[in-house]
Amino acid sequence: MDIVLLGPPGVGKGTQAERLEKLLKVPHIATGDIFRRLSNEDSALAGEVRTFMERGEYVPDDLTIKVFCAEFGRPEVRDGFVLDGFPRTTRQATVLDEALAAQGRKVDRALYITAPAAVLAARISGRIQCPECSAVYNTVTNPPRLSMVCDECGHALIRRADEEPDVVRARIDTYIRETEPVIAFYREAGILSEVDGSLPISEVEGKIDTALGSQSTPARNRNA
Ligand code: AMP
Image (cartoon, rainbow, N blue to C red):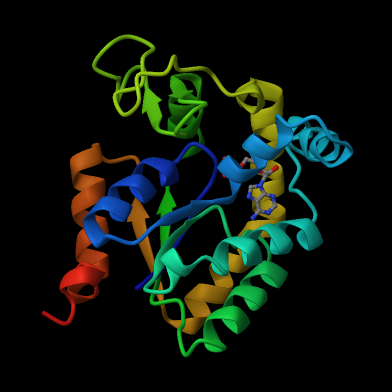
């Protein structure tokens, strides 16, 4: 099953991607996590990626598509995946369709998680992340068991550099300009499900599971 998660920064795509990975037993791919790891390296490319991210801009399509294609080539994603943060432009959406079609696959469902701007701002101000395994928490709505320590791997949690208010505003502008057309693309294709991300997390999960419906049988059990 191939699922795309769409929505503005701070809406909770990362949390849902991690949950769906476990539920559906298919890997999740988060291009933002890949770019964060890349930006920490000591190279000219890392510096370039860092500059885009620090400005709240998207990394250019050519590089993003290259990164995606490398992930898409991994044998682990042959039975499906949950995409968090890709595609974010119409060109990326076209490349994804072509890559899937070449394997007789298609995007099964695009989940568009929405929330009002005030909810997004509150979520982002409480958001903390594990730099080691990329698990996402929120100090208010989804705190780790031990303060500032990752439940999954025990690493110290951090606040993301691109979550300062000015950068968040720029990220939202970029999202509206570049990614809203992608939402229209999936809506026209008839595979978009809209989910209210401002609801309590258990209700968001319920709505997502309903949207996935019978498609949400874990890959491992599908032929059982
Ligand atoms: P995220 O963690 O998904 O919010 O992504 C963090 C940052 O990584 C974004 O603000 C972009 O600079 C970059 N990025 C992640 N995914 C993409 C993408 N599909 N296209 C372009 N830039 C991306």
